[in-house]
Image 1 (cartoon, rainbow, N blue to C red):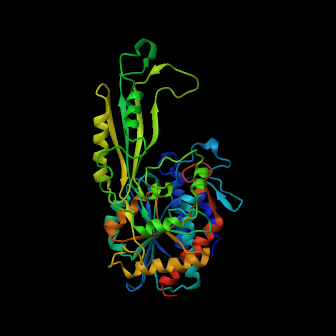
Image 2 (image 1 turned 30 degrees about the horizontal axis):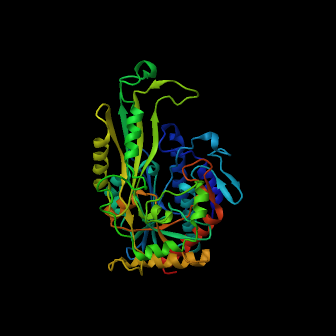
Image 3 (image 1 turned 90 degrees about the horizontal axis):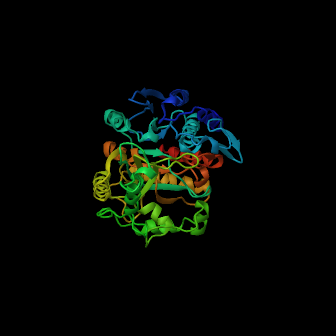
Length: 456
């Protein structure tokens, strides 16, 4: 059996940035690394070509009566920029203070390696284990998974599983496991505002036309009320009420608002009225500005009126909002509020549907929940309690994993989401790292859950 930490280091050394073509070799190297590792465990592996980066489909077959678990992960990572803020090179993994530092250690190479090593140990102990396992590992998650839905539609006859198992969500502390039972959806766009046909001297022409930065700033300011709510008519109409058991589960989190505020490094919270910060980040939709551009950005000053300015906007959505419902409301507000003395265009970007699954024993658990999904929840509950020393929490998470809702819609399968990364792991930011003790514990939970599902 291989050393999972050493294998993770090898994996991280491939700079597999899916959004930038200059990392094409790193993407290919990461894909070939995972393919070889799964083949070494006895899986039949197919590398499915897409328009961008291949999807790895690795299967361990058996009789149709055996349970079938689909384990999802992704081998692509976020860009490492800004490079100057990294304490160690992003693609030279460094082990220090019980952590492995490097881009992709926590998102998603470390959690994926935890599951691969769990399966490896399990099959080494029981080569004839009565369990079908499919690994489904893509290379486009960080670009919105554009090839994933067509892949599901094409290969659904080979994905007749009982549920999907993955770790692309978080936990609050290294001693508290979380089973994520809800994810927010997503709607993204960019708004580009144009004034004059070129940048203008602000002394010669200032005062006779509207500055695109001003027009854009006024638009952005109009999209929230002073108390933090999204100021778009109909935006909250489809938001479902939060179940009492969800609020009760959240109260067990054990992190104070003061600790959370200190971690964020902010003087005060700005959550909508009637919701704590912990509730707002899990139960409420949002509208955020992810980037804004316009005018001179260099050192010193350059007195111009820019020709163009733009803003990147994201809306996180909760059940029963959908991109199909929310995108037209957002665009209508933009069109209505931008002044008529500038021109503009709205650029569509990718989206995702919210997802929620109810664990067994809750008041709103579906009566027809599949037996093996319920069995998996019970098994992972027991395994997490044994390994982490306390029962797991069942919480929604504020992030989005777009493919989860696609899997539910196309394959009819729910997902069991085992959280493994910590707030301090710095996902998508410089100095990303992964707690190796959490990796080991998570791998043990994974092994025990799979073993229980196979009746061992």
